[in-house]
Length: 123
Image (cartoon, rainbow, N blue to C red; front, side, top):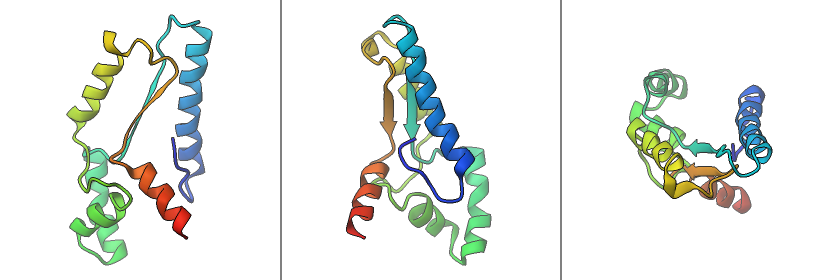
């Protein structure tokens, strides 16, 4: 919930709404409830992988180009996250080491938001 993408208003509202919900829960909890969100780039899930062949055909490029240039185009890391990596972020978020994570967002996107902002500033 850091970038609004074109033609996806319901998706964008959902992402930003979940961040607001986590912040609201944390505010209501008076420091006793650790509500937080995790924002990732593309994760190597069955759903994400299933989209690649159709995107390749639609764009007239190879599946590898879809991953590298379309899905990971703004990311500094050109491979999708593994589900276990996302799980580890949650393990940290719920651990005793994250007690100050009250209403925060853990952004693990391979630099995608940063690169997106840089690209927009150039244009």
